[in-house]
Image 1: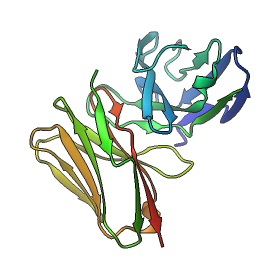
Image 2: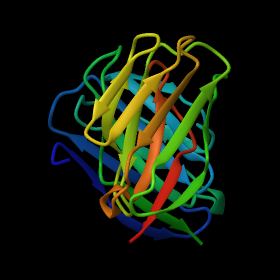
Image 3: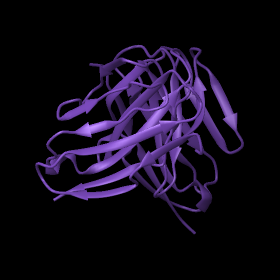
Image 4: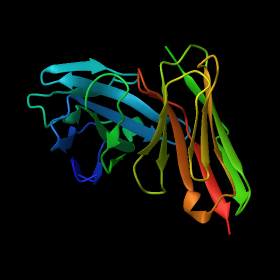
Length: 113
Length: 107
């Protein structure tokens, strides 16, 4: 969707390097999420944020760091990338808590060598 | 933590055949959402079910929410090649996704 931009779309890095995946939304949605997608595991929630300066862990947070200083941005950082973090990462937004749908970005494919 | 189990993981059908994917939870779901992801794409919202026993239809797609709100299904009648992709259920409260069912359709 045009309202969510993820960058980079493709990234190859080496084990131990720091990598930051960016997510930017133009809707001012309160909630933002990071998921990773791996074969056999579906979509697993890494971290989410309910508003600026509010973040919380999801199912698989280990090895990841997030921040949200501005409502529109929600970067995901791998401080020391490992091969097991090779995956497709999706950012998503939701307007507010409750029964609202998720809108996903196009995804970032990360390969850790 | 809460888990949503989805089966089957893969389904290969001949065009025109029906297709069903099932989601099951050990705990009561507040609501359930369904998403479709085309090959190489991102998940896109299809529908949300909230009420016990709810049934909703979108053309050839029929979505059901169990009476106990612990299971849900998506049924596609007479599949077409445009139905190819991975279908995910998602517990709409905690946003826990099932593993997805990858559908391939042979023309």
